[in-house]
Length: 362
Image (cartoon, rainbow, N blue to C red; front, side, top):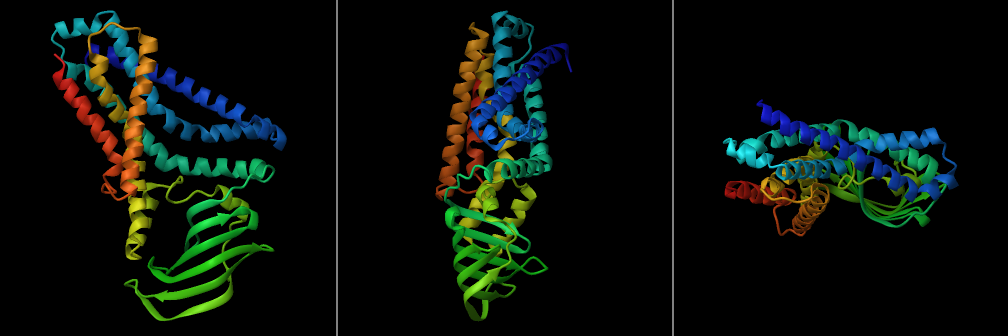
């Protein structure tokens, strides 16, 4: 690595770490004061509160890290421009691409680390944080709201729930798939309502179908007016239980669920999981997409105030990225874009804009 590369990279890394720490601290402070009344009402001890926020740090990091790197990159190159260092480097024959490569390499390194953190640490820390929330906050401050389209796994049963009404402790329009030991679907149950009564989940108007290895129904379906469902979750757990479509799960688990849904010929649910799979894969690499997208503007030889302009431009670029990202996800769920492509459209757009801009800089 050349001296110039080290010089630019050291400035970006130092700025990134400083801004990341500031944003993570600000995130915790805002969340703390937003929920302060609930914490005081629950009488939660300070060491439990500290543990809760330590457990949420991986999630906070994943949310603010791309924006922190974006601001640091903009600030670094704006400062270099103000002191005519970019002009001096280009006069010495150092190309725009040469100046950009160390930052792109660092963005790739941070993205890889974020992906590893997401897949190996986030799931465990969020489960522990949700357990603390359930034990100290949710039960003491019940503010349950109706939830729709919940999906989760319990033992060898996969639940798809249209509506959950916490006040009645009831699940409405439920489909349950039972897996055989080899992972195939052995039984499908459809229940109009499942209600939690005296510590037991009791389903009403239940129809059960046996399923063969090809996913076809075999034999005559069974009907029960009432049937006990072997579900260990308490109703209050379901209030904060994360859906496999929206929650903190791994790529490996999502891939397995996609394969199961394909075998069950549940196309719409399968497409939603494909979108979620690629969203979780694309999210960590937003570092690279944002950096490449903004580099042409950052490397432009133009004098401006580093702090305010970097923050303002960073907000604008970040806003554009997430608007395009959210819109493409919506298009994917509406069937207007291939499910696997939808989460990558924002990244592809920024790559095209960034690489084209770098090529146009003279």
